[in-house]
Figure (cartoon, rainbow over the protein chains, first blue to last red):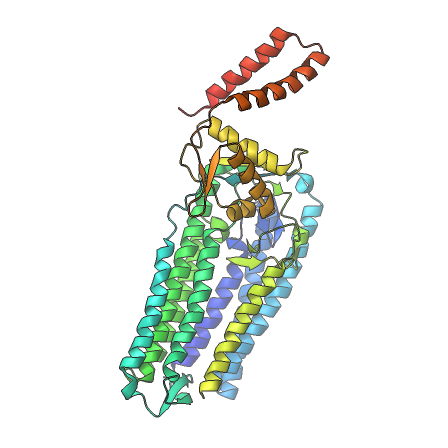
Length: 366
Length: 128
C-alpha cells in the first residue's frame, strides 16, 4: 500500500490546484472575482486577462507547493501532516492572491462608465413547480440505510470481537478500539444519522434556493438556474447515499465481514467519485448554471440588491436587509450563509455540536 | 410565468406583487388550481421579509383570488364573481380617478376612451 500515498499526495495536490485555478471561470457571468459586473463586461479583454493571469499564477503556485511537499515528505516520511499543511498553505496564499485580483476588478469598476447603471427591479418566477428536481421521497432512503446498518449490527453481534476496531490509519491498520457492547453497534448508525441530516438539509435548501432571473432573458436564465438547481440536488442526494453506504461497509468491517482493506478501498473510491462528480458540476454547470451554453446573450445589469459591500473580503456575506439565510456564493460553487442573520449562527452551532457530540459519544463508548 | 418588482418605486412592494398576481390571473397566465410559490420561497426570491409576502397572500385570500391550504399552499381559486360589494368598491375607485381627470378638464368621452383602450389592451394580453 505504501506506493498509494505518494500517488494520493500527487492527485490531491493536482486536483486542488486545478479547482483553484478554475475558480474565476465557474463564477456567474455577472461577477468577476466577487465584484458584480454587467454580463456584457464578462468577456472584456481586461477581465479576460485577469482571469487568465489568476489561473497561471495558481498553476505555478500549485506546482511549487507540490515540489516543496514532496521534498518534505521524503524527509519526514509521514504524509498526513504534509498534505494537510500543504493544502492549508495553498488555500491561504490563493486567498491573498484573490484579494489582490478582487482589488484590481474593483478599481476597474470604479473607473467604468457602467458602475452606476444599476437595475432596481427584481424578476421572480411565480410558478411553483420544481421541474426535474428529485422528489423529496428519495430522502426516505437514508433512514432505511441507517435501519439496515443497525439491523446488521444486531444480527452479527456474536461475531463482534472483544476489542472493536473503529478507526484505521493510512495503511489500514486499526488504531482505535472500543469495548464490545451493544453501544458499539450504534456508533456507525449515529454517524450515518448525522451525515443524513446534513445532506437532507442541503438537499432541501437547494430545492427552495433563490432564483435570480435576468429580465432581459427570462427563459434562458430560468433554464440555466433550473439545471443548476437540479444537478446540485442530485449531487447532494447521491453523495449522501454514497457516504452512508461507506459507513455501512465500515459497520460490516467492524464485525470482520470485510477486512480493513475494504474500508481503504471503499473510502478512497467514495472520495474519488465525489471529487470527480463535483469537478464535472463545476466545469459543465458552473455556479448558478453560468457555464451552460445559451443562445441569447443577456443584458445582466448590476443589481440594486446585490452590493459588493455586502461581501466582506469577497467571500463572507453580510446583509442585514436580506431575509435569506442561504445564498449562492459569489466565489466558488454552492452556498454560503448570510452572517448578518442570527439563524446562520444557529446552523453553524448545530453543525459543530453534531461533530462534537459524535466524538464525545465514541469517547464515551470507549 | 414571471413578475417584476421595482424596489426603487414609491409603490409598496406588497402592492406591486399583489397587483402583478391579480394581473396574471386576469390575463389567464395563472389559472384556477395553479399553485403559487410558498411564502418562504417568494420572500427569498424577491429578497423581502416573509411578512411582506404573508400580507400579499392574506389580501389575495380576502379578495377571493386564492385559497390557502395547509398542505398544498396557496392555490389560485375560481375567478371571484363581481358581486354588489365588489362593484361598489370599484365604483369608488373609479370615482377617485374620475375626480382627478375632471379636475384637469378631461372630458367624459375622453375618459371613456381611455377606459375602453385599457380593456382592449388587457384583452390582447390575455392568454386564450
